[in-house]
Image 1 (cartoon, rainbow, N blue to C red):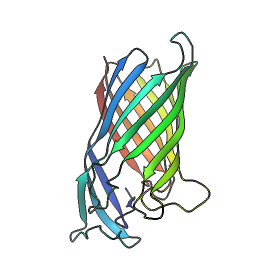
Image 2: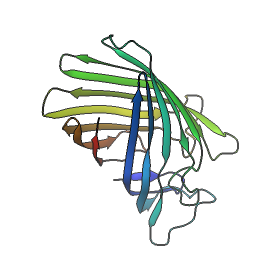
Image 3: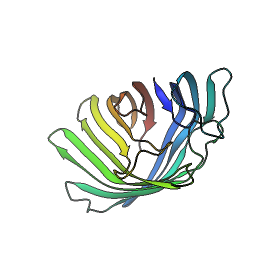
Length: 223
């Protein structure tokens, strides 16, 4: 709800359908592919003029493919250590349409370092790193962003509550560039199951270009 589509210059409700993540682990390395199959957007109001090549929407509805990401995670610490450290890096593929205005048809690169460990019954994990994102501006062809996340999950129960903070920040030397603005969300969730699981999360955005409220529903299999 109240999600801004920056390049289209409109605000409305966004549905992401068919979001997925597939990961394979071999020793210290995890290979992952993730993305969103389709996005459906219904405009509620306009806050800025659309970008030059964004098509107008006569009925206030926009539809586009989502983004797709490929990443590699390498564990940096021995298995016996109580805290796991890891390096993650990857790329976002240019699968969206500039004319729709929901995202950038551009290649991004990201790299983060992270750690995870348990304190009593709580699993705590966090990541911090760099995102090199392509922009639509001729004067600033890329933006270097600080990427961050912090997550806590209460384990060893049938239902696992969790809380997560995730977002990105632009540099302090200039104003945000259109299409790669600051993002930030608080996600509070519940997960049921181990090998076959289901999770529901409530989302509250705390940056202007994040949703005012949302819900994520996911299910998966771990082997």
